[in-house]
Image (cartoon, rainbow, N blue to C red; front, side, top):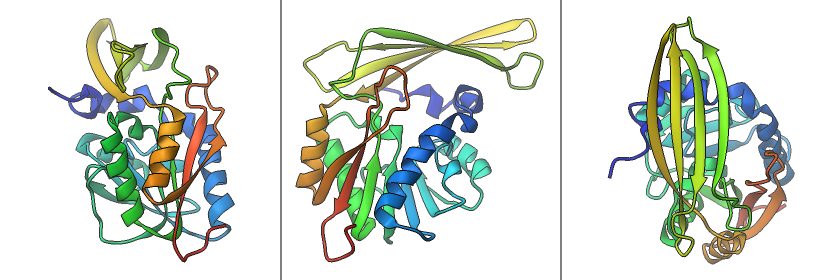
Length: 254
């Protein structure tokens, strides 16, 4: 089954879908989480599932960073936005860079993990890339406790219909086809207007959905001391928490 088109043939639309300036408020929460554990200084971080690099773009002034993503199209956006960052194509469940960092972060790309085994594999990736006492932070889009489905949101218009990229309006429809499993579906319909022409594209994303307790229990099982931080970045509260994990070991644990 083909993957989401936003990370393939529609990746060129990303700057209209999600401008980096929209992430300034979110990034403050990530910076605060990193600083609360790591303290002052220019620490090293690895982002798993960096996408277009929007959240990371607000952190690179203070941290040395490397980034991983499955989509070459999205990495092209991140490379342009974050030229100082070392980028790698890879799957957050299996990638191995052969080095460690002070922190590993995963923004909402972690929402694409659909099974508990996917979560375990990604936590293992974070673990192998962290020094003892290092910090893991992630932010799934939805938890079982915060999902309100079905729901519909309209975004835009964004851009200039007379410009090369045109103007984009898109509809986001979230639903849970089978409440007994660990996935939901998000359907996007994109309306791209260039001059008098309007093109319409459909894009389907299957995401994972787990209770907060599952995230925390599997982090603990994987060798982390798990916790949460409030993450009030959406009016409907669907992200709700930053999940944190401090790698157990002999290193600093503040």
